[in-house]
Length: 205
Image (tube, rainbow, N blue to C red):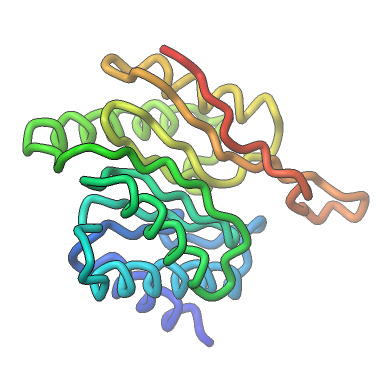
């Protein structure tokens, strides 16, 4: 599989309508192999497709982010059973290792609410981009109902704290939930992800 084919897969995934599906910008890095990137994109596409084919309720308000086999579900559904069903669908996708279900049971978001969330995401990403000590390419940012979810890879605990700190400082953010994974540098200077995911760490504003 060439890099061009990998990029095309990402473009197709992002172009899919309905629920929002994303990986970490479709990007690969030293910490993230091309094969893993393709697996994540395939998993995201499969979940999105299954959500759209589900006819026993509305899953269009669910957002999906995939990184290293870890699936983050956020957004909202109109009733509790759909929250559970969305998680079951996520687990059924290929190469999925873990699922974090942050879906809220509420009505659909209005245009203004969605705009505020996008504005928060943009501000958080801008702050991280301006920080030369943070690798923003390795971090996916999802905002729903003014709650910021961070998913991806960082090099140190200090970098993790810097990134979550940037998110907390953006006006309007009510809470930050971190699913960031620290990458450990091995003796041979090859960076390897830690076995333990530092997930679900919540910071109040």
